[in-house]
Image 1 (cartoon, rainbow, N blue to C red):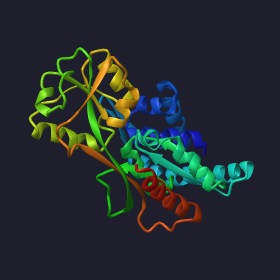
Image 2 (image 1 turned 135 degrees about the vertical axis):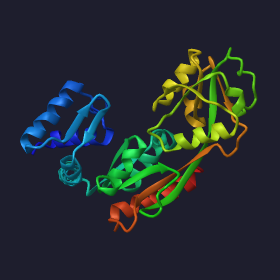
Image 3 (image 1 turned 90 degrees about the vertical axis):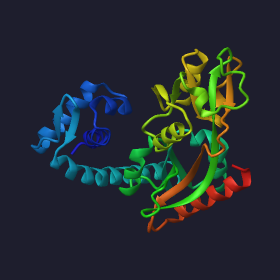
Length: 297
């Protein structure tokens, strides 16, 4: 069975959409549809029920998904071993993060790790949060950097860092002169922020409403640079992590802290509970906590 077909199937299954899967795979929707159809023909079973509302997986799709993850994980392991032989390393760690974490940790985090452990290769990828748990559970990745809340029944977590948020507005915006932002200040203004692929989204919406804001969401997006760009063009008020807002801001925008000091996100290093760690995994777990403590992250 073609690994590429399986990978395509997994994306469609997880995202429930041909178009969303195509975006993640960097191919056309037509190509995704053809791959799904080819896999269905090979198996002699329908995998999705198509309707105007989207795709619904069949019972065969549910069964295949569990098996597909095992197959893809094993293929990834084999490729990792071959790459290790080629580049002279003894282990490869597959690590996924919610968006923004590599930017917060900086490249120094990785280069320092390689200085300390030259025989361990890191495969570090940013990914939407909700599928990350499936990737952890299936063993397709070794670790994940995830924000709270964490499922502590099935996963072990080590606190890494917390950060707060800023409102971003054009310098001529009516709110630009505010020293702090209260939630009711944002009433009547379109908001651009990270959306439903992020576990913090529903908590933030609840926070806004309880704080007196009836949010008018203009755009939900994962790219913080575009959140700042939308504010730069005067299209609305962006909301982003402070360290990212400051990274992308220039003289045309103003970043303003919120008066709500509890408006923070805490990020943890997570792995499956009961997972027996290899030497490489133990090294990364210990290194991460020690490095963050030493660098004040």
